[in-house]
Amino acid sequence: AQKVTQAQTEISVVEKEDVTLDCVYETRDTTYYLFWYKQPPSGELVFLIRRNSFDEQNEISGRYSWNFQKSTSSFNFTITASQVVDSAVYFCALSEAPQLGAGNNRKLIWGLGTSLAVNP
Amino acid sequence: KAGVTQTPRYLIKTRGQQVTLSCSPISGHRSVSWYQQTPGQGLQFLFEYFSETQRNKGNFPGRFSGRQFSNSRSEMNVSTLELGDSALYLCASSRGGAGGPYNEQFFGPGTRLTVL
Image 1: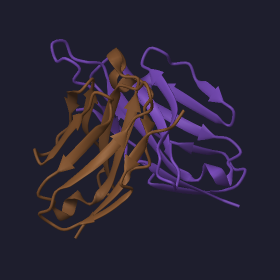
Image 2: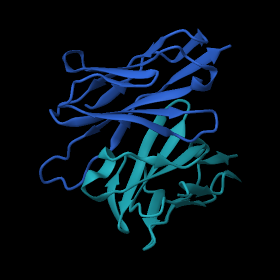
Image 3: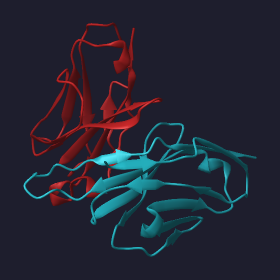
Image 4: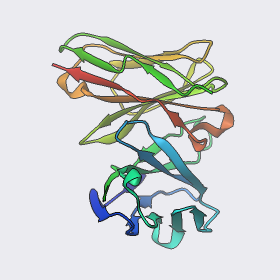
């Protein structure tokens, strides 16, 4: 079964601390995509990154970085020098490749999210 | 470019009633997906529409239905409401095509449905 686990329900840090949000996934497919989304208090989910299963290079975007390790089925997200504006719920999601003959039967499978509170 | 809009933002209904939620995707986006978000179950996929056809469906009962119009706007309907249907309903649009959920999805602010 396909599954995304975000073991950390809530994290609280003080501004300027580094914080890592964990994401572990399960899938039988060799081709799949992983995503991170941010949901600030306003409620709108914001896309952060998409990574396909063949690209294990780590990615850095400003204070954000992602560590993809297929060997441990993990796609962790690190925020460096956190800021109060980073306070949000962060979701990890998995999208699998379509099965032959199954049409476009694909969907995003979401973790339950990690609520990050960055305190001044 | 205007973002994804959802109406209404808040809705209060009673058990047994039905409700229709509306979503207008970003201009040029042909794929619209619907999600239900609850504290206990997180985000759960309801269905996806592309070019007026339901392309993908989650594991929800038949009381949940949707449709998409020729201008890509989408509606979802929930009939015979139950208390457990109280949730934030999110709509997401993407360019669609062969990309499906692989594409970056842009989310609306959601409709908060409360069933009493």
